[in-house]
Length: 70
Image (cartoon, rainbow, N blue to C red; front, side, top):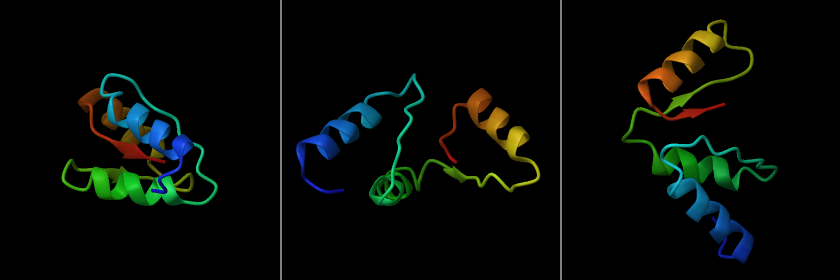
């Protein structure tokens, strides 16, 4: 991620929000790349709005406490 103050603040919030679900609006896809690298060892599920079982995967991710990228 870039080293500007806004990006640093977002990274700190995301890193420290283990019990909350951070929402990131990411028009330049920099956060997307950072999330994929940060959570690659934690069974990150990457979902698309067109996935046929989207609600099932999302619900399971929330119940099991696993990271989900939508």
